[in-house]
Structure formats: C-alpha cells, structure tokens
Image 1: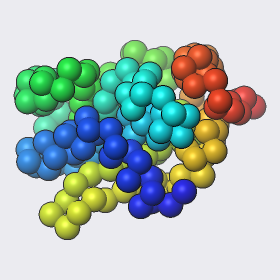
Image 2 (image 1 turned 180 degrees about the vertical axis):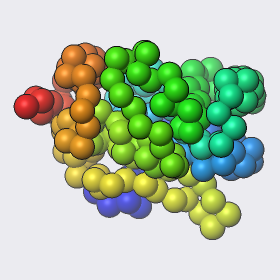
Image 3 (image 1 turned 120 degrees about the horizontal axis):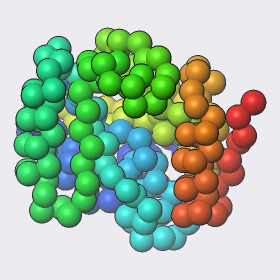
Image 4 (image 1 turned 90 degrees about the vertical axis):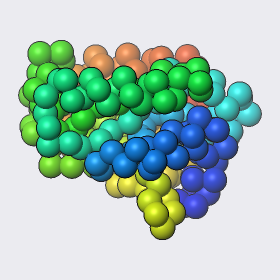
Length: 188
C-alpha cells in the first residue's frame, strides 16, 4: 500500500476528512490528525467492517510553544466544540508540553519534543506512527515506517522506545478483540 492508496482509504471515514478540514481552517501550529483513527479506518475497510468500528477517539497533535495548561485546554475545548456535530471524541494534545505530564501519568521518562512528528515517532506501535495534515497544496503525510504493516494488519512494537510492555499488551489485546485478523508481534 502506498501513500496515495492509504489516504484514499483513510479519508473514506468522513470524520477524518472533517477533522483535517477543521485543523486547516483553525491553522493550529504543526497540527496533524494521527494514529489509530487513520489506521483503524484502513483496517475497517480491509476487513469489511463499518468505517468507524472500534475507533475510540480521534487524536490531534499540534505544537505550540505556549506550554500552559490554559492554552492547551482552550484548544481542546474549541476543537471539541467546533467538531461536536460529528459525535466523536477528539483528543487534542500540545506536543510541546507532553514531557510535563507523561512521567507522572505513565511512570516513564519523556523527553521534550521539538515538533509534532517527534510525538508520532513515540507511538507504541510502528503501524500507528502515521500523521496526516491538510496544507494549502493538498495533503501531507508523515509515516516513517510506511504502510506495509497497516495493509498486512500487523501490530509490532516501536523498537525506538523504552515503553511499558504492559501498555503495549493492553492496547494490542483491545485491538485484537476488535480486529481478530491482526497479527500482534510480541515485545522482546
């Protein structure tokens, strides 16, 4: 599966398309629609399920040097209000401030990031290391591992991370219950 085919399938989900349009309209800095909502839409098409089957939320990353909770909260509330008509949960997170709360929440270190794609690089699984954003020239995709695992329904750990094997196992088990066709590669 190439980038164009991935985009064509992921955008069959009208929620993904609407979020991308709204992010472009809002012009949040370095904003991307990321991860599961894109990949799981593709899995749903490949496995002939409803387009939104199993998608718990729609993740948005952006990168704003204003690292205050108040600024992030304002973005979260504005985006949810503007997209409330879609009837889905939007998870917007400023990647500039993840290092401030991640260690307390997950018990693991998290380095300060320089841009949103750094956050995409830190996903637990390689197949979900995907981001899409709309630009004035069209769509831009960030997918450091390509789309082979997405197309082949493979979930494998991100080898670049020191992460919680328990978190990976829980996420993989949830996905396996929703998409029994996936192959989960165990952590070492």
